[in-house]
Image (cartoon, rainbow, N blue to C red):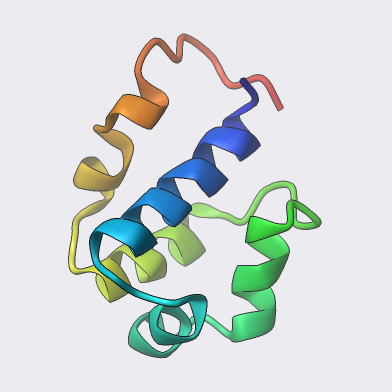
Length: 80
């Protein structure tokens, strides 16, 4: 699985877990809705750590908590 797919899977799983829509996540994280949608539809290949950090703020978690999850288990290197 590509890193980009893992990232989208993690965002979607957190949205389900926290019962958040993309709109609610966009609002809570101050990440523009278009940016979030481009990440999720994979038209943005590399969203950047600052954007991921803002999404984490919106979810109320740390970057460590974001990446320390089953979606990223077994990731030795990034296959983009």
